[in-house]
Amino acid sequence: MLTNITYIPQLFSFSEDNYQLSINSFTKSDNNKTINLGYIVNSENSYTISVVSLNFNPLYDIYLEDVLLNQFINLKIQSSYIFHSTSGQFDSRFKIHFYPIGLNVSLVDNKKDYLNIQYNNNALQIFTNLDIENKYFYKIYDIHGSLITSDKINSKQILIKQPKGVYLFNIYNNYNTYNMKFIVQ
Image (tube, rainbow, N blue to C red):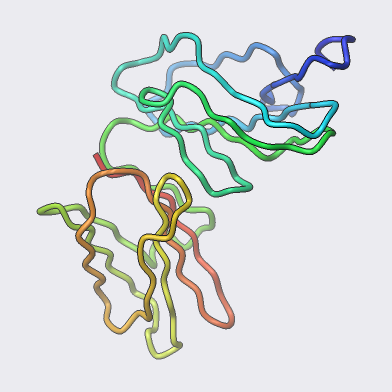
């Protein structure tokens, strides 16, 4: 534990060798970086994660991901996030993502060759190499976890008029599920 006072909620990150850290640092990197966050609370309640000051590279965006609710919060725009939790220790509910500003794609699995996402003329263009004869469907969620659209994949290209933002793209059929998180700026 980071403190012996049990009624104080604790938020911590993990080092590369999986140690809990109350303060974490890492070297400058030009790549996307993700840091897992854990927390400990002693009662079921609503809690707030707040950012007091952001002193990071201005060429990067910083997102808090609530893995449980599939929500992404741009911490440069929204400096606090309220969530509900039962009591206990939770080591995998939250992640912090550092992305270079622009279109950033992070696949949950290694199916990167199946999807290509572009943003042109205020529209998302999603190209897939999946065998559409296998009856794939898709769902697109916004940063708040709200479903934007869903449909059957009938062609190799999906065109959706959507503003810039953070999205979760889910492709599935009876045998496979692929998830892609992407940010359009």
